[in-house]
Image (cartoon, rainbow, N blue to C red; front, side, top):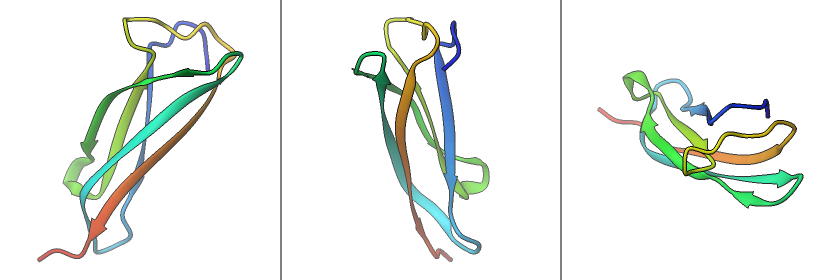
Amino acid sequence: MSAGIKSFGSAVFCSDGKKVTGGGGNAVVTAPTTQFTSLTQSVPTSFNTGWQVSFGLGGDKAFVGGESVEYNIYAICATVS
């Protein structure tokens, strides 16, 4: 992670022909020390084709740089008419 960043995000997408019906994620800073992050955003992507999340340290704290972050993002997708 780069110094000064207050949050980061990513997304996962449904396979062709499916729409997202829900989703979420979690993240943990694993180095240099273990600390949990806050989920700051958890919403469908444009056109409901995936799920996007953002994470931060909370309390307006910024990453100091050099942290390793492990995160999971999931999307619940279904064929809808």
